[in-house]
Length: 191
Image (tube, rainbow, N blue to C red; front, top):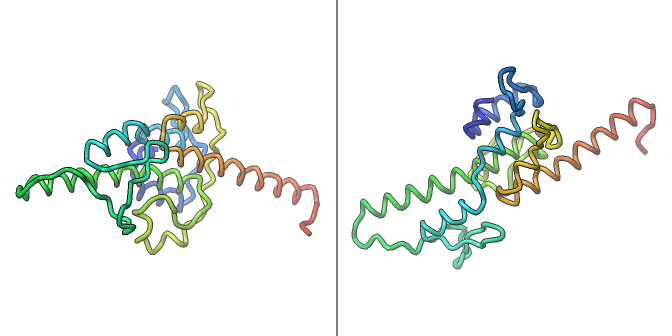
């Protein structure tokens, strides 16, 4: 739960691999948030993400949050000019890396908890992860309500649109799995 609350994707992945109970809630949490609720809550607000990118000199699409890629090389290009100040240049690079990594980790955490498994196509940090290809699906239920009647989808409304899209795709996958289980329980064979 703590890993989801702070966005620690390595610990989230380890917990999921070890069979963590996806609907578990902390006994002393009056909101009764699941790991998925906590993971979505800790994600950056989308408008703040876009604004911070612009402050760092990154040109972003305000609807999708995708960075402009004039050279088609997949690299972030900042318009900030540190001049000949190497220390200032390094500071800008570190801030851009931190900003991008936080966003990628937000998306990756949701993918691990409720995605279809495998690599996360929206998180660049996952492209170099050799084990990601073998990642199992996550089975957190985005429709599970907390004590306030809120779902992870409700909490995702002001997050990156891809997060809400992943949650909705997960709902469809879980619905298909439930139907398959019901069919198997009732003796209906797949054709």
